[in-house]
Length: 97
Image 1 (tube, helix red, strand yellow):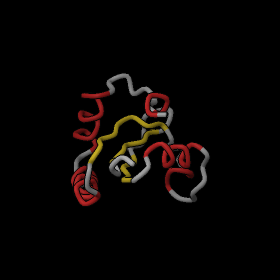
Image 2: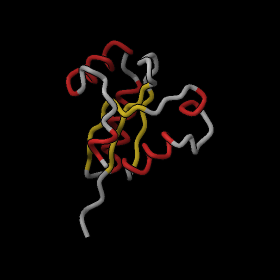
Image 3: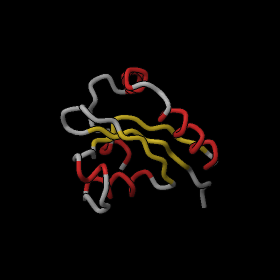
């Protein structure tokens, strides 16, 4: 069995007006849950389900530390980071499944 991987991820809505940051131990499942609107809260209320950025970590505490760091950034800095990987802001979900 392979080693467990953890991810931080950024989601947006179809108009790219919202950025949501999360951390998970199962990226594919978690994004699917967002797309299915399975959980009440911010992402369901604001239709935030487009995966625009993610990073992989071997240790959960590294992923959580990165999530906290990113949440402290300005919106502009977050957008610049997204643009390094995904300047067209396409939905990366199909690339990870």
